[in-house]
Amino acid sequence: MHTRAPAEGLAGLRETWRADVVSGFLVFLIALPLCLGISMASGFPPVAGILTAIVGGVVATFFGSAPLTIKGPAAGLIVIALGAVQDLGGGDPILGYRRALATIVIAGVIQVVFSLVRAGALGDLFPSSVVHGMLAAIGVIIIAKQVHVMLGVPGVSGEPLELLARIPASIASMNPEIVVIGTLSLIVLFGMPMLPWSWTKKIPPPLVVVVLAMSLASYFDLGHEHHYHVASHDYVVGPSFLVRLPGSLLSAITLPDFSSAFDATSIRYVVMFALVGSIESLLSAKAVDSLDPLKRRSDLDRDLLATGIGNVIAGMIGGLPMISEIVRSSANVNNGARTRLANFSHGVFLLLFVSVAPWLLQRIPLAALAAMLVYTGLRLASPQELARTWRIGREQMVIFGATLLVTLATDLLVGVLAGILVKTALHWRNGMPLRNVLRPHVEVIEDGEVTTLRIAQAAVFSNFLTIKRHLAQVPAQRSVVIDLSGTHIVDHTVMERLHELMDEWNLVGRQLEVIGLDAHRGLSEHPLAARKKALEVA
Image (cartoon, rainbow, N blue to C red; front, top):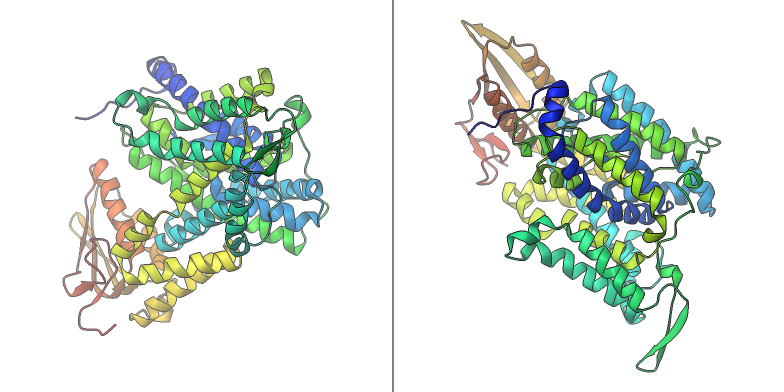
């Protein structure tokens, strides 16, 4: 059954505002603890994430953000934000924070430029296996850092692999009361989605975690520092295990420090914020479009503009970097939202809550926030994602693994570059001429009302944007056939992107057909696996 799209303007607002406001409130309940947790994991003050979500809702909404996306801080940028604070501060976390804010502002300006030059297509450029390897590495790093907080062992620091190696020591010296809070929080997050009762699906698990954790914090009297004994061991708990916030939202505003904004280290973080943030935001917006019951397609360039402007403002007042965030956006769709008013409402609810009741937030245990981030990290680096990549093809696992391992050993930028280089090398081994890395051989043939794009040699992730530009030049009333019979290699990214385009064109009544793969063999049984000419030897 076709779902009617909401009308434009005031009539449309009257038609959908109740559903949007309700969804905005439910998303606010999810966003509040996540914003606090992401902030603290990033080395920012806890309120920084809330500032970003308020800007993302109250401001970015009006610059053309995608209709169902929720703007705010994301776990995927924790690693970059924390690295910026540590590397730019030289041991001074406050200075590092203010200098990190400067890189966020500059990255936001670059994202605005990206949008003006219509770089929304960046989401199509990066190979899926590289992106998933990057996200899995981020998940592992989040777990490596937050599991120590969840165990009640403060001050554990180091590189990701070092943090993973120190987990057994933290387990041996864990604080039992804090572990109870963290473990029960994790059980709720994993267990609630499995409950068979439909009414439980309407309650956000993070909200249950916060209520449960605050109750346990009160029972354990975390508001006052004291000692307790378990099996002859002495443990200390107190306010240091709870969230700390400034007295008011205005006093939380922090200005950036641009004194080292253009040195090599700052530029490196500007590039990472701009590129990784843009890619993750664009991929999230595309994923949310696929969930939209009204089957709308967002203007990704406008969404990137909204994200860039939001980042400039958030960075200027002390906030974290902003993206279109997939978890909250998915919840927004599931809650029945229909327009941008839901994003705006979630920002307003956050603003009202932290203005009226900041004291309530200071009763939330850090272990509960750490549990939410460990849960997020486990979802990013889930075994299911590994299995999905394996089903697509063994070469995808090589790319995924290279990106994951190099990111853990170095940083995100180097890891992504390593994944792209490995993928390019595999394509060359499978028959891609080096001259076709960036530019495919495309012949355009007009025949009646049909335009055929005959592609030769290689159709791969790095030259797909050229193929897409050719498609964009075809008049809307014409059908298009993409003939791949002349290619030696068609990679998974291109297969996936063409499949998405066929679905998009079908929604608007256009016809896109892909032919010429009969002589190719798939590198796995997966329907979107890479293809190479059957007569060639791998």
